[in-house]
Amino acid sequence: MDRRLLGNILIIIVIILSASGLLMYFLAFEKNVASLHTFFAMLFILAMVFHIINNKLPLTNYIKGKRLGKLKKFQSPLVLLIGVVITIGLYTDAPVLNKLYSWGNEIRNEQLGKTAESFDYQIIYLDKKVGKQKLSVELKKGIAFQYPLFAIWAEDSIGNYIETLYVSRVISSSSFDFGKKVDDKWESAIVRRPESLPYWSHKRGIKATDGLYVPLNGASDLDAVSGATPTSNFVVNSKLNFKKKSNYKIVLEVNQSYDWNAFYSKDKFPKDKTYSGSGQVGQPSLIYATEINDFEKYRLMKLIGHGHHSGKNGKLYTDVSKITTAKYIADRIIVSLE
Image (cartoon, rainbow, N blue to C red):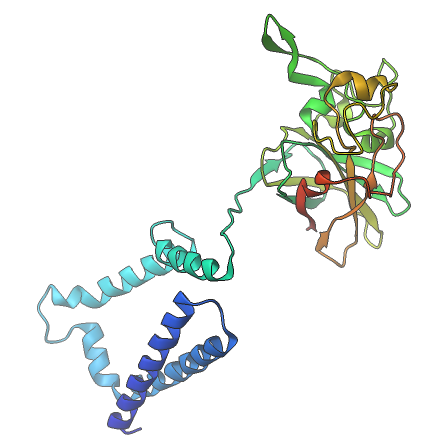
């Protein structure tokens, strides 16, 4: 191809790419601008191929450093090294290098009335859990998230309990760091919370010595699956033995204290000693579930009901019309199976 013609083509393409790139950086996304930028980027790559072919000899000399001083011979490797470092830094989201992108992102979000979110996650590894398949449950917290308690377990396709995959440590032992007040100071103590996760505790079906289904003083089947209660977005990495060609359910129960509403108020059930006596109740626990099989890796958990407000039974109550803010404890819950 004629070098002069190719040079003119490259100049025009660079001008168009620069203009469309600036528009994409400072303005909210527009398909027409993105399409224009993409088309001329591909055209630029094609033109550069012809440019390299037409200038093979001088470009080779530039890279090899012929007829250059000793120091200038290292220009090409140095430029390549800098390019590799910057590329890796940008790809791995290095804070310093990504400030420029973040600034432009803030400008575009302001035009759309959006705010940037932080997606930092607590990773909970249950290394002692035994199983052939790796299972992860990711929960992105909602606007009502205030350190709730959780239990995650597996069931068969008809709802029979199989095993617990994760449970908050304070529930697995009934030992709370702020269990009782002594001389105006909080001390750890055993506190029975049957209303906390009643659907899970009744599904598990093991009574403690005091007749309640919520565990007491630890339990051998929960040693490997209990963990600290998450304080933000989290991912629980657990394991299970998943039989091929079988369907399972993964169920999550969540409950948060002191989240009363107009229906589930402090004085709603005055004769219920658990609800009216502990002072730690609120809206009942919420239950999320999804079916998994060996064909789908990711599944979104859906709200299917709530537990008993004081944990007197293990029924699933599917009417959630009287639940308000508790629905926003979790923004989304995703199950993945490897």
